[in-house]
Structures are given as structure tokens and as C-alpha cells.
Image 1 (cartoon, rainbow, N blue to C red):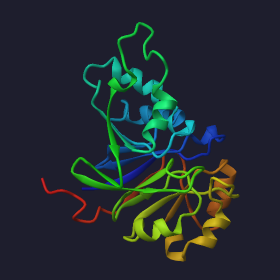
Image 2: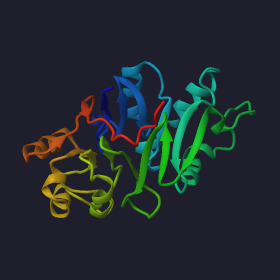
Image 3: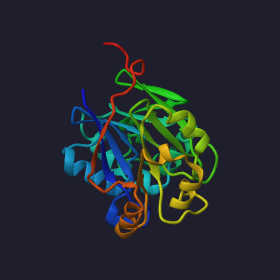
Length: 252
């Protein structure tokens, strides 16, 4: 069984040409779990796979990470084979924020008779959830306000930080098994995002060597980060992952 990470978008909210930050964990080349649902990222997903995602984890509710939901609602609601079946894993403190962003419009359809969430199977999650008999771990990150942004780990395989400032204590716990760590990083940090100087100051060398940097501002900035010796995610990249550690995968 082969695991991989496909990058649909790697840019920050202003870097439209790089796509909104979004990725899919693949198993044997097939989409397994998608992380976030930005507009440009969703377009890349549809162009590659030919159908909308069937399982998503949502890190937080800034629009570059959830703006694709209206399109996803339409695709699901009007397809009887998909309606109510797309799994949507959402941290419990993020769920009301997601509803305010994408689900609270007074009428999901002009003709009435539909709730926005009818199109999905929503699964509120705490510090972990099971997807397809595999355990995923969830941890808080540092992005704007506490309890509004989360990362996710497939133990032994991959960590996706979502948008964050450096989180050395979290990664000491949730990236301690040789995982590839997809990390928010630009050339220059700010109060809600990491810069390269920030992570070089906060993280040990062995962790930096496992980082895959995304959420930067331009292709030129990506080239500069790469020139400093780091792995930099590009739109459409597919990264091979280690197999998850046994015990995280339920026996059939």
C-alpha cells in the first residue's frame, strides 16, 4: 500500500497563481482524505480527479481555505449518489465558525426545502478521528485566535500544520515519528503566519529537514526558500510518504 500527498495549491491568500493551500492524502494513487476546500485548490482537485472530494478535514475557516464550499454544496446536493455522503471532519470549535462562513445564508436554495448541511455528512472531531479505519490525530495551532485553527497528523506518515506561527511544543509531540511535516512558511513572518527566520529559530535541524514548506507569497519567494536548502511545495507536486505506523490502522 503506497501513501502520498498531492498539493492542489500552495500559496497564501493573495498568491492566486499558486492556488489556495489545499492537499489530498492519497492511498495507492487514489484520493483518500482532502485537507481544506479553497476555491483555486478545489478547481485543481476537480481538474485532476474528475469529481469532487468524498472526505475532507477542515483546518480553519478563512476563505482561502473554505471558499469552495458553495460549489461543493451544489455538486453534492443535486447528485443523489453524493448527497449526504461526503464526509466532513471538523474540529468542534471550528464547526460554528464554518457554519457562519458557509452554511448560515437564509436559504441554501432559492426555492427552499434544503439545508446547507444536507449535502454533507458532518463529523465533529476532538483530538482524533477515524477515517476508513485509520486513526488521525488533531492538534491546535497558532493562527489568529485560540481554538480556531488546527493541524492533523497521520502518525508516521505526514503532518499538515495548516496556517500557523511556529508550534515547537506541538510538533515535539505530533511530529515525533519521522513524518513529512507540511508547514506554513513564507520569507517573512507576521502575527498569524510563520517566516523562514521564525522556524529556523524555533525548530531543531532534524525537524527542518523533514519540513515541506507551503503558504508562501509568490513563485519567486518559493525559489528563494528552495535556494536556502528547504523542500518547497509547488502546485501539483506529489510527495511520497512513509506508511503509517501500525496501530494507527485498524485491522480489516
